[in-house]
Length: 132
Image (cartoon, rainbow, N blue to C red; front, side, top):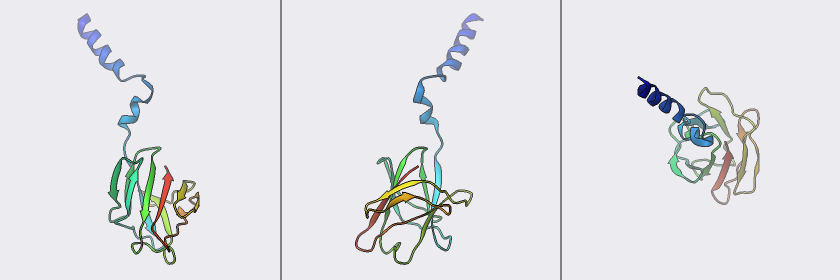
């Protein structure tokens, strides 16, 4: 009986402590890149923390883990900074504000109350990195 107790305690304690070990079990989060009409912007190449490369889905969805830095490659003609306004929203359709971003065009700042951010892909594709 005592051996069973020791075995159960070892299993219970093996999941405790250890600092960052819980990071491996965090769930992916999905945000969406949408345009001024609320439509998802698909086929945008993105990478998060330089590890995974993928493209946004039909709803503009992109996946990441908490505290990732995600870069979105805003290619012309998929999006056009002279015509399109872009926003970041969450899975519930609410805007995500105060996300810091920097773009290769030199633009940077925080997403506003509507999730809006500036980009400039007039002369070349702009890559904007968001600190999520």
